[in-house]
Picture (spheres, rainbow, N blue to C red):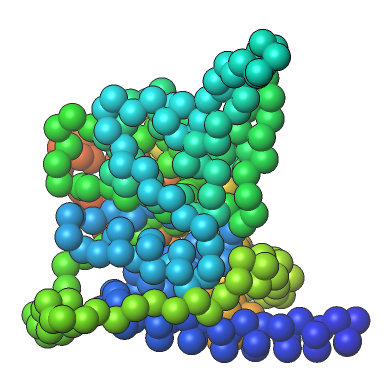
Length: 336
């Protein structure tokens, strides 16, 4: 057991060093978005998918492209539009005739057959097309004409969504939102950061990303994340936070019961368990803490909850509600 523990510690330290190198490389192309980059790395280390929400021009596409290069993953980009069909993502079967006249079907792989898929403006496609990604995101395989086709490993979907223009969009169904381990809000840069962006991106040359990981090393890092020890205090903090966000739970505070129409399910707690470990690894620590739970609360919960009509009419926001839940949890810990 001691040898296993020491081997795991050595692997975590080695992976943390590579992650620090990767973050430095990403920072040369993605300026001033440290939290966004960290959460993106957390999502990949969890082996999951992430939803990037932000206005146009905030380097969401650039970030996904850079991550693909840094981790050595094959990547594809699909621009979601109202006329996009499921076959445009998954692929389709075509009827071929050989020289002898024999006919047979051959499956043509769609762009989903890659290691890093960027689903750009995912909410612009119809529900039918959006649902085509559900099986791929959850089971890492697709079924065409009754035949199952495995996707490459690792497989990640990084989807983008524009929160401003809602005309001509189709809200993502709850079942699909729950498949994203994190929702990452991409905000506008500060004035000083925007000055750096202007100088770095409008010259003759731009910084280029370099490969740091191989896909196999990423898979090993994902396995190390699942082996990291989690203290009982962290587990209890996760359960307290997730269960208090459900309006029907007896531990939910009054403001949750009044404002929330539905809360996070067990998959949110699973996401917390993986994400807290991954955040610890990204920061070079051997185990997660309650602070990781608090820091990840918004990214894990915001897309797994919905406000009721009355709360929306009052102008309440999920961001503020989650912040109150975290403050309540912190206060309870301090009192204990």
